[in-house]
Amino acid sequence: MPRPQTIQISLPAGDPRGMRVAEITTRIVRVIEVPRSQLADFLKMPARVRQLNL
Image 1: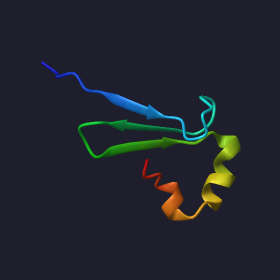
Image 2: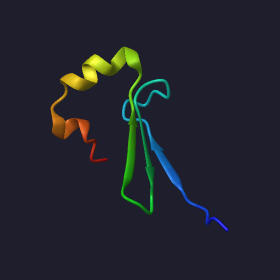
Image 3: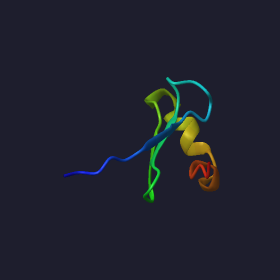
């Protein structure tokens, strides 16, 4: 039987239609979702900022 897990979703800009960061709290898994309209700006950010150490 699968065990329950918690997914934490962060909104770095505070806008749910903007960039979203999702993590499974008990694992080293992070997904960064960037809307297509913001992708160019996201890619211009320095790599250390794109890693989003929240």
